[in-house]
Amino acid sequence: MFDDKELIKSYRNGNENSIDILINKHKNLLYNLSNKLTENSYDADDLFQETWVKVFKNIDRYDENKSFETWIYTICINTYKDKYSKKKRWLNIIKDYFNNEDKDGVFKNATENKLLPEQEVVKEEKNSLLLKEINKLNDTYRIPLILFYFKDISYKEISNILDIPTGTVKSRLNYGKKKLKSALKEGFYG
Amino acid sequence: MDDKNLDKLISEVLSENVEPSYELLESTKRKVKGIKRKNHIIYLFILSIIMFLFQVFLIIKFSLNVYTIAFLYSVFTYSITVFIVSVYYYKKSFLRFITRKI
Image (cartoon, rainbow over all chains, first blue to last red):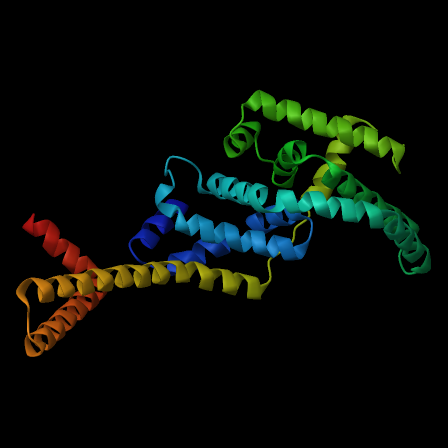
């Protein structure tokens, strides 16, 4: 497997093949993060693409003493904050409006679909409820939560990515989990 | 629900693997590769503006006639094109040449 730093060096020397290798190497992790942040595939595609463009535009600023993966995550989150957070506020209002209708639809489909075992339907419903609750959280608590659980990133790395102290990461994670717990008590998990 | 159970549930939901489509990957690679080309076009554009201003300066300063202007123009264009193309394609040897001279 190629080393990130070697690939970046080779890109700086004019080798365009290193772009393909770097993108292929980190594609899944970055796309998963984009997907979890944006909640829909269209925005995830845009965020994924914009992040890579920004990464290569600013590649000269990359500090080789730090991990390349962490640097990509930082750019991805900053791009998301710049572009999608404002949009999300409006989207959430619209989503909340249609939420009740949606819920009815899910239950209807679950009872109509006789091929799925009952447990499977309940599990899927629980997961979708949990995801909804996570997405309802404020970005201050949601982003550390996503980073911590989607790839088991350490507190230290999260603090580097978000540029906040490790203690703040821990407290935000605890607060996010606490909020989730209380929200879930009211729903399925109560 | 205890914390362990909640941890398990959250990681189950958030660690779900989604792969980017082939089209998205290809268009991303194309876009990224276009960054350098775009920069080269901008550099050439700036260089051509500078050269144009330099020619105007020469014409005004030395009040040149049409034939001299045409001759200078062709010499300028030809030499600059050759220079840019050779630097672009033989970047490494060019850099080696410059650093050796220094």
